Length: 308
Image 1 (spheres, rainbow, N blue to C red):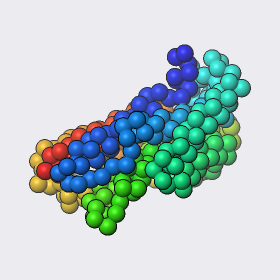
Image 2 (cartoon, helix red, strand yellow; image 1 turned 120 degrees about the horizontal axis):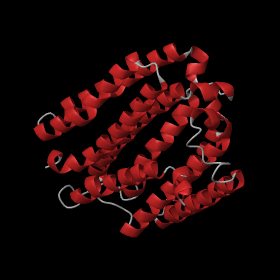
Image 3 (cartoon, rainbow, N blue to C red; image 1 turned 45 degrees about the vertical axis):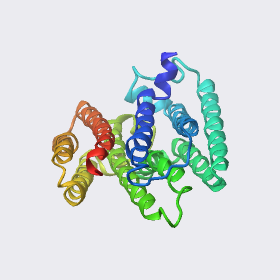
Image 4 (cartoon, helix red, strand yellow; image 1 turned 135 degrees about the horizontal axis):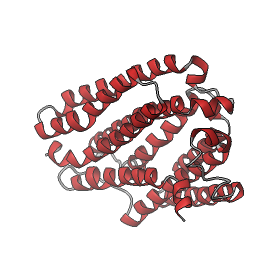
């Protein structure tokens, strides 16, 4: 059973679920009375939305490992799961079952809220993760962007399903304001994940080279790729500083939180990227980026102080 949970990256799935639950229960629900925010889904249907998202993400992780069998023999021989603990056939079947459940739930929820077109989001996400694993991964940067878009979409999905269907002329300004906040968090998730994916490409350069996958470090060399990722790592730092100064500067607790738990670790990552050479260093940077994603997500709990 532990190999099944490792295959579907249970820790990453917990992060996605946490992000979605915090968006709803820390950002939207607390401001229904004070700010007039209107949500669409019942608690149970929101739970189904999270399950649908997790099923599609878990399926993506499973099929990714199927296509990564050869590269994983070099990049992570001790952590290999497919064809070691779980057969390739069973992993592929798991991918299909999880996607049927995820897309099926998406179909049900879309009709429940009277927006059948929203069903396309689940279908596209599922298709993108499969195409990424089977072919797009071999295209420099494109694969990184696709995965990061899907991660950002998991955040944005809450706003799409909760706020847009309940929007009318009377509450449009309020709904749009909160939708914009969710959009900003989705952009944050996209940026951090994109950097992390590119760091992982540098870390996995040996296995990717043998498998003839054309990642950025293979096309340009590790040193040039490192410089590009370093420059990219500066973008979220300046973006968050701008965001804090523009919207949150009067809230000292909030400013302190972002400075210590989001901006400082990002600066640390940039410094480490500038000098990184060893595989272990890139693995460390990847871990810190995951922690920044967590601290960034947990900042949603601060909106009770921000939106007094």
